[in-house]
Image 1 (cartoon, one colour):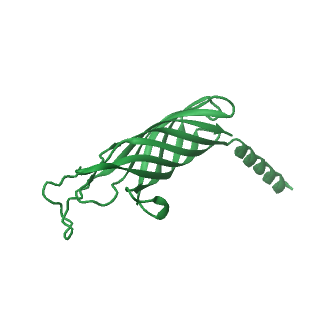
Image 2: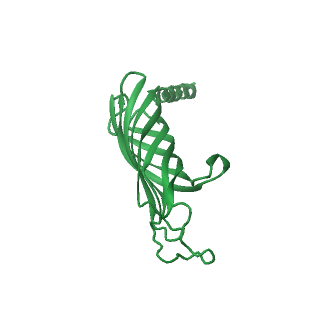
Image 3: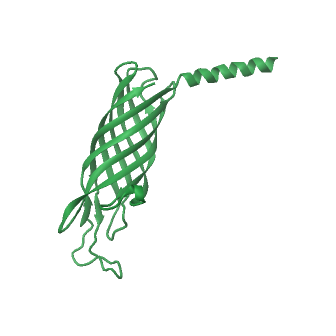
Length: 205
């Protein structure tokens, strides 16, 4: 009998914790700002792969563009949360003597959230970090048909969430995403860095 009472207490405690969680769905839109964005050069010997005369690490580079994302978050009763996202960024591929060509970056990943205020607070500043992948789809290719170059990386940043009503909220985010450079071109150096500056609207459950 005592064991049954203990089990019932534990079950009630678990149920209370589950009901205390808050689920959120967000749509964000904003800017994608790229740095260290030189991807290398197409000016290379086709036999040896060695760079040709006058080739530089910035012969091929990506440009800034817009970005939007969908995020789902599950928060604990205290100061912690978990978030998954899909994001689409539009950029341009630039190279000498060729008109700029539009291309896409698809991203997905998981982030851990650390809030400065507890669950239920109207304004919640947060810091975040996580892991992600990016699929860089060159001009003329399609991610739906298996095109693009997948790279794995990390991201970090922060922001603030604001509850507007019992159902709706708004947020601001600033994050930096870093991955190895795509396409494996000669002279490529370092990692590509993408800074997100965005605002969002969400439904809170």
